[in-house]
Image (cartoon, helix red, strand yellow):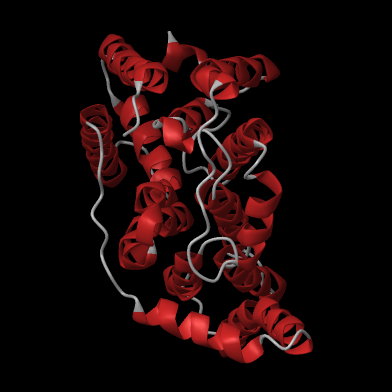
Length: 329
């Protein structure tokens, strides 16, 4: 039912995805979760928090619209680069379900903002693959990596994805590395000028030094239902990874390189988790684009479609029930 219907990509599929999103987010529109407080030097998220912390309903609406935008854009990114079956909207549905997998996610927060920036970075890097003069794309990727860190400090690690992409894409031009670095420091140059003009530069440097020194792994406290959903997702992701490596679909060197680039997000999120502090439960969201690719491959790769539909329905119902009956501590 689900998989067969979303194997195609027409406006009706995206309309249904929006309705499913409303179903998953329904309770949050009535009883909105708290928008998480800022952690570390995150000036842009500080501003957003000041604007929305006393307007939780508006925060939920903005978060929902943001997730729908990411749902649509990520599917286009995967389809255009042939990372999933072309003209399929299944990746959109899977991403939406994962972004709704815990009630605490059902508002605007630093990580769903970071996911939008991640999609922009991936889009820039993948478009640079076939471009002879790609400095604008690489510069843009570096710029947005820095911009994301102004919403969520551990996002600084996303800068690493740029040299990783250059290695995967077999590029050895020093100008590309330089362009990425210049793009990365550009937002911080403007930020430093702003702090300097307001006589805050010395104090903010101390704040950044303390944040870098606070390398600490915070424990993740999950409910039993969150663990069940997480383990279910992990099993499906491993199956999808196996299918990506050994599946029957013939892949060009370009498709393989772009697939590995998306999967690299998992490693980068693991490397940066030590700086997530109290937002560690939200940090998991960083790997959702990679999991979306793997789960889409898993469901499309199951030969017995009836079993694929049953497994998908169980997965969806687990998350739907969790969104309505989850009881926070």
